[in-house]
Amino acid sequence: MKVLLINGSPHREGCTYTALMEVAKELEAEGVETEIFHIGVKPVSGCLSCGSCAKSGSGKCAVSADSVNGFLEKARNADGFVFGSPVHFASAASALAAFMDRAFYVGRNTVFPYKPAAAVLSCRRGGASASFDQLNKYFTISQMPVVSSRYWNMVHGNTPDEVARDLEGMQVMRYIGKNMAWLLKSIEAGKAVGIQKPGQEPQVRTNFIR
Image (tube, rainbow, N blue to C red; front, side, top):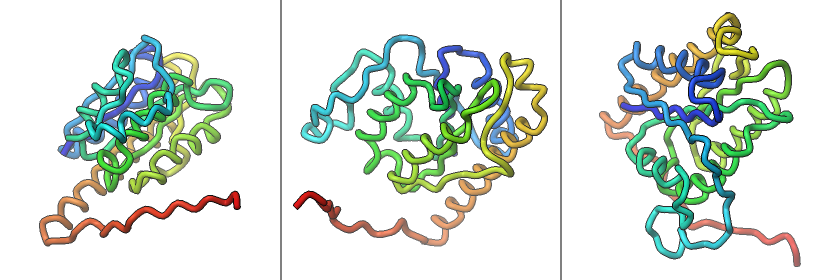
């Protein structure tokens, strides 16, 4: 079992990374392999609404200059995800939002369904709950079990050292790791006794403009 932890901060080893590493340590302690995927500091394009990914069936985004397609390759073989972001103006980092728009447009029917996911937010003071809500919507539209903790999935601090001293926040991160590991093991146990994924129906799209 493997979990990809996506660092959506421009800082490779900043506050968001510190939170993700606390989750990763708990996952590793539970026997789950982890990998941190940093989206990087190069510009990330928003979705161009070109439809090329759907038309080609390639499972890749037509925009190839950033890290989205590299992530999608790794995501196909991952069993779970933790998306981490700093809070900017009471929302997730714009680069991560653009990254997730495209990754989930390409993969929400093929890469992500039934794989557990969690969102982790790092903020100095406020705006984390709004950002938490923003990221969770990607999961619920993609048939992904959402992994919870004992409080909102957030840490507070202006530096990695301050985040490490947010004892409640660090405990929340550890519970994400524990709960993710438990859910992954439960899914594996279900597979072992023949429990199948839910059947799919043809998609229905309703246009409210008549």
